[in-house]
Length: 268
Image (cartoon, rainbow, N blue to C red; front, side):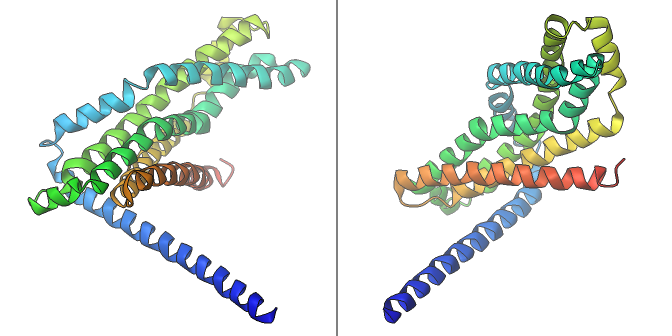
C-alpha cells in the first residue's frame, strides 16, 4: 500500500512537472514569436496586401455577428440596469451607464470574445494545418520566414481591426439601449442621448481602445503560436485550436483587469 501511494505521488508530481515545463515552453515560444513579429514590422508596406486581406476577414466577415451582439448587449444592459434604476426614479441615467460600461469594458471585451472564437481559432487551425503537413518547414527550407509571410500580417490586422470593431459595437449597443429605454423604461430618446453624451469621457475612450488593441495583439500572437507548435496530425490541430481559444479567453480577462487597475485603481 505504501509503495502504491509512493508511485501515485511520483506520477502526480511528474504530471505537474510536465505541465509546468509545457507551459514555460509555450510561453517562451510565444514571447520569442512576438519579438520576431516586432522585428518584421519593417516589412509592413511590403506585406500590405496580406494585411488588408486579413483585416477584411477579421472585420467585414464578422460584421453580422458583431452587429447582433452589439445591439443585444446594449438592450440587455439597459433592461437589467434600467429596471433597478426605475425603482429609484433615476431611469433617465441609463444612457450614461451604458456608454460608460461599453467604452471602459464591455466593448473591448465582447469584441475580443467574438474575434477569438471566429478569427483567432481560424488562425490557429490554418497555421496548425500548415505545420503538420510540413508546409512551414518547406518555407524555412526555401529561406522564407514564416513569421514575415504568415504571422506578422495576421497580428497587425487583428490588433488594428479590434479597436474599430469595439467602437462599432459600442455605437450599436447605445442604439439598442435607446430602443429599450424608450419602449420599456419610458425614457425619451432626447433625454437618453443627452445623458449618454454627458457620460462620454476621453479617458474611458482611450483606455477602451488601448484594451482592444492589446487584446488584438494577445489573441493573434497566442493563436499563431499554438498553431505553429501543432503536432500529431489533425488531432493535434484540433488540440492547438482549442488550447489557443482557452488561453486567449483567460489572458483577455486577466490583462483586462490589469489595465483597468492601472488606470482606475486610484479611483479616478
